[in-house]
Image 1 (cartoon, rainbow, N blue to C red):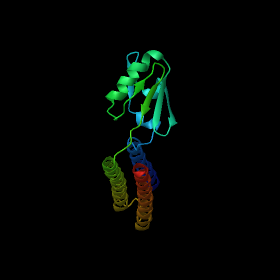
Image 2: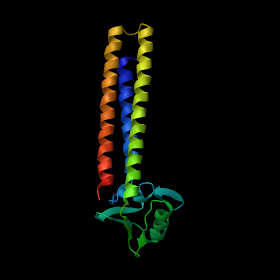
Image 3: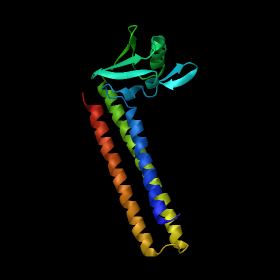
Image 4: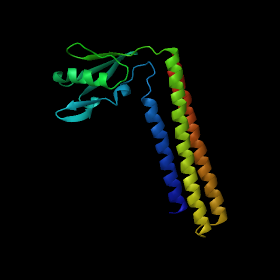
Length: 186
């Protein structure tokens, strides 16, 4: 693997770390309704477990309310039970046509716990990025040791990898600040 491939691989893996952090952040409830809150809910549909958004539409009619409109009426009670079983702290109510899910207000203590969680996920993402940097740097040093690249090429490549690392860590820091602000908003 040459320098170009190593840098491309590093870019891809660092982007993956950022994607993983975003994925974790999307699961953190902020007190504001968002359809992604229900992404983990799977519904039994003709013998198969499928994501909720494949058996009905999820909308946000008010800032603190989710509405699920199943495409088949016979799924109402199944969807309601699955939302309750998902342990999201939500209480769905079924009116025979749609399922309304009020989003409860978060307590100050719970907000602080969520901020700690946000910081932990952010730190995990930064560790993953640093691990990618270390791995790529090791490969680059082996290439130089085996005389496949020169010292100058090694020096330039190490600097480029460091710049890539700094950029991705800055992105995670920005995501953490944004999510923390979202959690603390009342």
